[in-house]
Amino acid sequence: MSVLTFRKGRELAIALAMVAVVACSGAGGGDATGGKAPAATGGKATGGAATGGTATGGMSSTGGTATGGAVTATGGAATGGERAGLGGVGGPPSGGAAGGTSTGGGGAGGARAGGSSGAAGQGGSGVDAAGVASSLSSSAGFKLVAPCGTIASTQRSCDHNPRSNCGSGLVTFLRVDKTLGGTKGKFYEVKLHFRGILEMNQYAGGTSDHNGFYTGGQVSNASGMDGGAQYNQYVLETASPKAIYHLNHLDQDQRDKYRVGNPGGSGVHHFGFLMDYHETIRIEGGSTVSLYMLDNDCLFGRNCKPPSDDFGHCDLQTMPDIPAAVQQPLDGNFIWIDVDSVTEAQ
Image: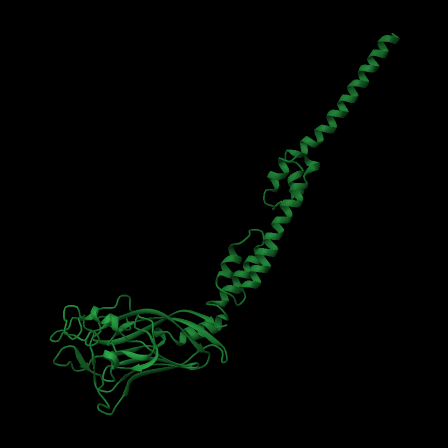
């Protein structure tokens, strides 16, 4: 009996020891499969469940808690919320998109960035940009429309309508003056889209952008040019900074293009030039901007298809996508301006 008792006691001790070992190792395995480790990761942390669940065990879920939780907090609250939000105030439109759609966790930060940037509009102060843009938009009245009066026998020209002040030198036949929005003392870079159909002229003493836009200078017939005061001058003028922009310049190397089919034509006059270009000008807030047409006789070129000086007939042209405020085709000349963008000058 003593031997049997001893053996049973020894077997029982071994069994109890094995149970203790299994119990200790089993606790770690249970937590590793997703019991406590995902909860320790922080719930919303990216990859919290995956990292904690597949880690070495519940007690070793340091990667889930520290890495997942900290990265999400940094991306959501700091980067998505505060930086995008502060950058969006008075900044470019991209601030709103970045803040709103950036890192998922920082919902409040995204909303803040989106809201502030949205108000800013086209850059700088949203109110300033809107005021400047509305001042220079043809939809708000900043345009020229010159319909033909009596048509000349050549069919390529017509009288101004109304016909007035003829023979009294250089006359302003149409003029629109606008007081710019924005803040006085601030300067703005304004990108404008010019469209229209115009009688052309030639200028010297300034700078050509080779598309019809000419900065500074005056009409000229020097050095083989064919400009003159008897042909319409279309002008955009800014009071501050003081600047003159001619809108209907034809470069010398473009003349052959408009005399094709009529070698004897000047290549400059008696046809309608289809104007469609983008230019950026600098203007001070609260200053005056003027758009006007000058001529020293009562005739101007009609909206006739090239070639130039093709006397005897006139096929009218249409400018695509012009608002209904300007009849198409218009027998006459017109200028339509849209504002592409406004930014505060540095």
